[in-house]
Length: 79
Length: 353
Image 1 (cartoon, rainbow over the protein chains, first blue to last red):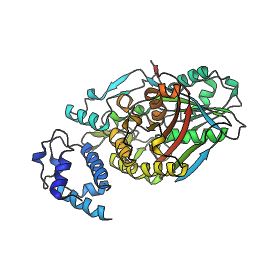
Image 2: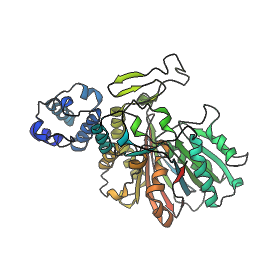
Image 3: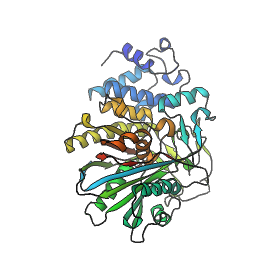
């Protein structure tokens, strides 16, 4: 599992039209520019492809920041 | 999962049909220009074909069936079975296959019935029709698969409206003792019934006072209870969970290698889902993974035959191919098939005015 900074950088690169330097571990990802539900699917695809972890709707509902996401992915990747 | 084999069945031909009218998702005025562009980039769906009020689902299957029978030079009196896979039948009753038995001029001793499946339906249809023919008592059959999905989506629902296109198809199978074995692997999980659902209009809720009330679910998503609803995250997770193990098991049980497959033709859900499935299957030669969704969107049970027609016709006509087909979606229901085709009839795409 990569560290939090690397996770943040990689995920920030998945977002269209968003300057990756504006994304930090504490960014509330629902507040990034032009956020739409499409981003939820992009996050799920990214996490599945890179960490073989599946995030469900409940997981996403319980997260706000990229730090929260990283914690859930880390926990689930150990299962 | 249920792995099964099918012998004595050859794949004789395939044809597909779409309405002439094109809807571009760049023009989808319900959402901002930025959202349209993100949608197209993520789902891969630029355009869709939409059937007007004058075109029904059976119309979208009639023309490809008629032309396919002609091109195969089949005597209509030799066609023993016609099966229609659809979730948007012309009428609640009777079934659409029966209407088409008559309209196509098929004999009265022809078996005709519908199968109520969507995105997985082509695989199930092949298996059911193939089984009816495999003993050799019934010899020739036509599988029709199509949907007019756009009749069920609300313009004001950005989670469903821009995804779907209308299409119909016809596939001809026949009893043939020299045919290669076909392999199938199928499954169902009804716990996903709410993930893709039209709530009102059936015997559970019927048509009520609020059936036609436009209800806002969240910003950008308003629909009536007669409309199709989609739980995008639930569907995505279903596809990630079920499809690649299903296809891997198919190869394992069939004792075949993915490297020997000429084309992977998957249900055209959307690019994000399909590419995720491709990566999970570790298919690196992307030229073997065919897409029609850019121009036709998600075409439900017609998506696999439509993709064969629009993306692989010259190979299908001129040589022998091993095809991996996989359908997955509403139900949840899914299935995959490994089949060989040899210089089949594959008609050019038909457009209905």
